[in-house]
Length: 188
Ligand code: IMP
Image (cartoon, rainbow, N blue to C red; front, side, top):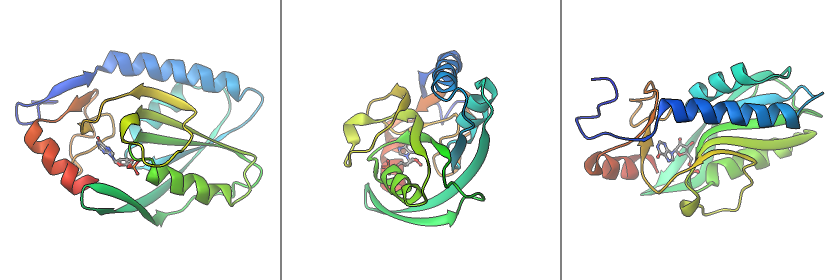
């Protein structure tokens, strides 16, 4: 059954809650960037569903580009050592850049991306993240637009995966304890 992860799924954030919050974020972003044409930078692959809904709710002109990175994890922790798999297609000099991320966990990945893009001379850089696991933060990184602050649980759906599965779920779900333990070891 769709949304049923081996019978052990728990919906943390419903489809309706996501739709409402994404519209609110889009309104806030549209107001903050009025008279501008920001470049939205989606971090592949987790941000794709969030980005797709966000851009359709924006009321300002904007462009979209993507960046893809691979994190080298060490055991249960994100190491912050990152390899660039796909760079931006465009030059961001003088641009207003809005990084669009699925989830900020330790913050190490976002910290790397923010610093990397900062060296390219943009006019401004901000971050929109659908989910924020604040209690796991290891590095201080600014996240200007946050959808939901969530507890320290491994979540899937709405773009987020476990071993490339479950990205298509329309809601955010928490996995069962067995899968969560396995995901923690594999993904972080
Ligand atoms: P950070 O560097 O620890 O902040 O890791 C952020 C990345 O880890 C995200 O972009 C996700 O790809 C992945 N991640 C962290 N927590 C989860 C989760 O609960 N579910 C799925 N992916 C996660």
